[in-house]
Amino acid sequence: MMLAYDPLRLASLLVQMRGAIESARRMHSGDPMAADALRAVRRAVGAVEHTWAPVVRSILAGDPLAAGVEVLRLDADGVRAFATRLAGLDHEQLLDDAERMGELAAMFQMLDAHPALARDLADDLDGWVALCDQLAHTYNLLLDDSPTAAVAAARARLVGALAAVVGDDLWRLDLLTPYAAALLVPHLDLRGVQLAEVAHGIVARWCDDMHSSLQAPLPADVVLPLLLTDPVACTEYVRLAGAQPATLFQASSDAEVVHRVVLTATDPARVDAAQAGELLVPLFEWYADGNRPLEYTAVDDPQWRLLLADALTPWLLHLSPLDGTWALAVDDKRRYLQLLVADDASLARLVADTEAVRAGLTRSLLRDGVVDQRAFAALIGMVSELTIHRRYADEQARAEGHTLLMTAITTVATLPLSTAGGLVVGAGAEVVGGFAPFDPARAARDEEYVQTYSRVLIGAAYLHALYGHWQREGTLPAGVPPPPMPDPDAEWPMGDFHRRLEGWLHTLPGGAAGARGQQVVAVVGPWVNAVDVGEEAGRG
Amino acid sequence: MSDPSAQPLATASALAAASARAGELRRLAAQVEALRLLDLHRWAGDEVWIGPVAWQCREQLLAHRRLLLFAADGLRAAARRVEQGALGP
Image (cartoon, rainbow over all chains, first blue to last red; front, side, top):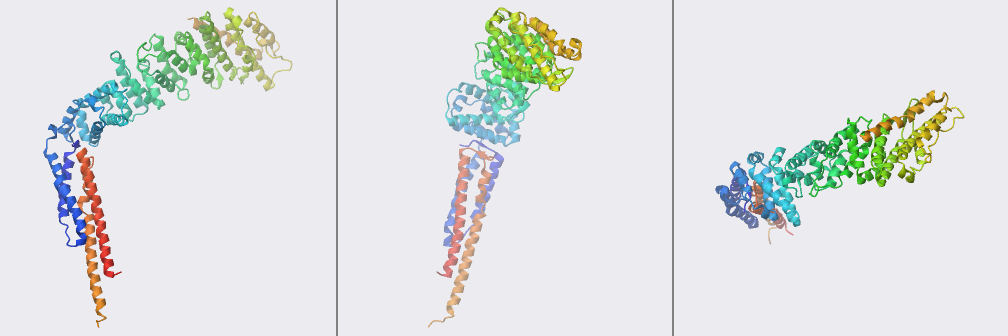
């Protein structure tokens, strides 16, 4: 059986055979010692003259278009006939036959070496489209059939050969069903932005008609894993998904892969805060609008809030009512944060991942090497309002909300602090750490205590950091005592602290109105005013 | 008593004949190595045709090629034997 041939080159082979026979016939010798050699020559000539030349002649004289589908003549008519016959194959049988798949793959690969004919095939893609689509359909059905290694390898080779028809003309993928197109993508050697665009185009097409085929495996199941080794592709895909988040959250049966794509795309090691906002805000907005993965289907994702929590953790500060990095309305920031703190699991996730919260805050807070205290204080206020006030009846949520606040507070207490007098390297962590986070029994009956004591703690932490800074500078006159410490047992910790702070300010040179007194006000002030802003925003 | 000078003359003639025969065998070997039959497989590659028949043809052409090259080697070995036989043990 002959599978495919190039008639011009086969004709050349026949000419060469004739020439070889003629030249060999001229050999002669009467020497008995040359007899063996001449016999070898005669046998070779005989094989060519009586076996192979006739075979070639019969092929060239025959009509391959009338022959079986396995025959491909590499000329325009032959390719057209081949293209037409592709659609008529018994695809299910084909996919179980390693030998036939190998032959078909070889035919495509042969065609690949003839660019002009490949273009002819491309002009008549119906057969190829039908084959790809049918193969994808059958392939899908057979995914769990545990094929032999030979069959699996032959299927992969065949899909690779079919992918070669796409070449650089990626638009040809649009001719296929999304799943068929997805199967070809791994063989196209795409990277970065191009991979993301192709993958997203395929998944978007599927999403447009998703309800007709929600049975896994889905196109996204094939293409999204390809992105995971290509962070640029992840970022570009998530950027494209911003206009149609369903391509992330209603397209894949493997939620874990979706999570990894989003987290890779927004990894702080790769993108800055503004880029992270461009990527994440549309996704949060989609959820805040009430969209969800489709429950009880292949694309369900019960853990979606955890993904949002993980994605937001490094960028938490940008939901502060006083942070302008993401150019969001305060109401939107509250809606997004509400998505997370209203749910036990995602709130617990934010709390559990304290190191990531701390790292994110550290990175976000340090603008030009100093802390944006107001933004941070407002964030604390909003988180406090959402987690402690709004969910005060829920003891677990209240405790977790407070843990989150304490994580944030101990973080900021270690950061450089800008003051009118210059830069103070934060040393206030021990102030925060030196106190029990809060009195759970009291917190259970007194929500205001929880909130105000948090403020007192961070204010005191900064105050002590400032005091330590002055001491290290040696600019503080002798006799100035350390600032007051917060008292967790005070009836009203904020009032108590303020009262003792007022007294301490008078020990400074110039008193409360002096330069150092004003510095203190600048440090502690945000923890009154900006927190109020945040709390107000949290109330909505 | 034989002429002692006749022996060298007979040997020289045999040597010349053997040398001519060996030369012919070597020419024949070179002719075999230059046969177009040896290159036919290059015209029958995957870019020309594929399939079981095509692969069988190529295999057989390659097999004949190996035999022809072996035959050429055999001709050169024969040429050496002719020369050595003329020189005696």
